[in-house]
Amino acid sequence: MFPKKKEHHKEEQNPATVEQPKEQLSKGEKPAEELQKQIESLKKEKDDIFAKLQRVAADYDNYQKRSARQLADSIITRKIKS
Image 1 (tube, rainbow, N blue to C red):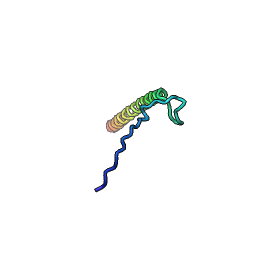
Image 2 (image 1 turned 30 degrees about the vertical axis):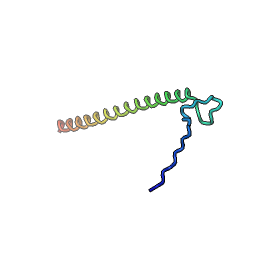
Image 3 (image 1 turned 90 degrees about the vertical axis):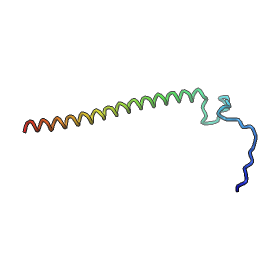
Image 4 (image 1 turned 180 degrees about the vertical axis):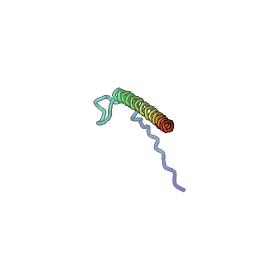
């Protein structure tokens, strides 16, 4: 139905595997060491935020359980006084 596209067989260099000296890096590109440090920093930040999220979730769960107990205790106390 459609004609096949011609394949070009020229060797292409993968830009991710080609190392460039710092002075040849274009704007916005960072050396691998800087990127690795940034990755580690972001991983640590993610872990810290996740730990906080877990604590907040546990606090909320405890709050729900505590408020249900307090409500039940309040109802029982009112029935006993009546």
